[in-house]
View 1: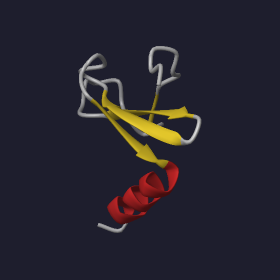
View 2: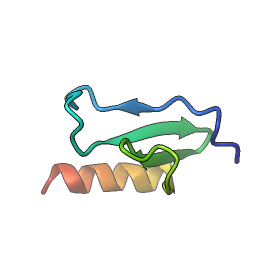
View 3: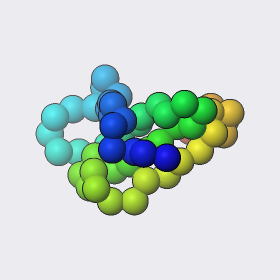
View 4: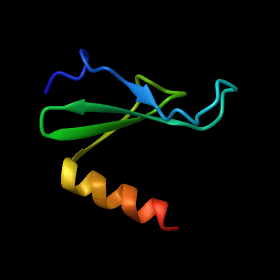
Length: 61
């Protein structure tokens, strides 16, 4: 999978003050997550259902 052409986005509530943020990109049938402070670093790739489960779980913490 070519990850170089992805369009990355941060949450709208994420400030521009250099805080700890993650960025998301959508690639066909997966969601890719990276650390905004280290855009060339490791990336986490997961299926859409797994990402939806993760997001619901984090929201309910």
